[in-house]
Image 1: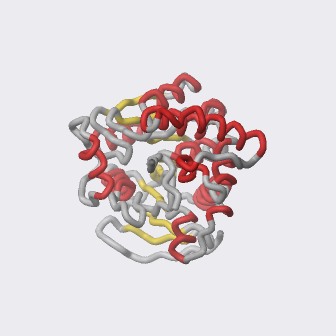
Image 2 (image 1 turned 90 degrees about the vertical axis):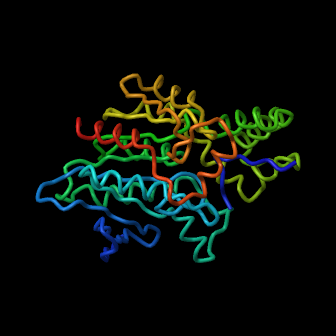
Length: 311
C-alpha cells in the first residue's frame, strides 16, 4: 500500500538587489542558505513588512516544489503589495540544497528552519523602511513562525498551521487514509520519541518513517504548537480554510483554544494552498496544487490586510 501523507512532502550577511517585474520585486540574499524576494511598494513612509515562511518539503519562495507549481505564496505576496504591504518570502534551505544536489535527508533538522527564519527577522528588524514586522507562516511554517515570533516581531499570522504535535497530526491523517496502520504508527512514533529511532517498522510506514528521515521527524516532534503559540504576547491571526484536505479546521481551533486572545478566521472554500475549491471533490482540490495561474482567495487578502492595518 502506498500512503501519501500530504503534510510531509520530503524528498548570513550579504545583500544584492535586481529589478524583476512590475511589482518592483527585488532579489535579496540573507546568507548562504537564504535567498528571497522583497516586494516593497513605492512609498515615502515606513510600512509593515510581512515575512512569509513556506510549508513542508523543499519549497521555494513562491510556494512551489519540483513537480507542484501553484505560485500560492507568490500570489499572496503580490496581493498584499497591492494593499500597500511589503513582503519578503524566501526559498527554504532544503530547496536550495536539493537544487545544488547537496540535500541529505539524514542531515535535516527542524531547528535549521527556525534558525533561518530568525536570520531573516534579524536582517530586517532594524530596517527603518518598515514600521512593523509580521510573520506569516504557512503549514509547517506556522510552527516555525510562532517560535520565531516570540522575539522582535510585532504580530503573527498562522496560515493552515497544525495545532498538534506533528506525530499526532500524522496519526490523525492515517486514521482517515489507512485506519489499519493507525495503531502501528502510534507505537512507532512513541518509540521514536523515547529512543530516538524506530527499528521494528512496518513496511507500509516506511515512506513516513524511513531511517533517513527519523532524525528530522524526531526534531519536529519536540515542538508543540499549542505550547509555542501560548508564549506569544503579540496580536495573532489564525486562518484556515474549510476545504483544506491536509490540516483540519480542528487544528486551527486547537491553536485558538491555546491562545484565546488570538483571532480565528475560517475561510469558506479555501484549501491548504490558499486557493478556492467550490466542491468537496478530492480531484478538484488536488488539481489546484499544480495550477500556477489560480489566484489565492480574495477573502484571505482582506483578512490579512485588515489585521495588519489595525495593529
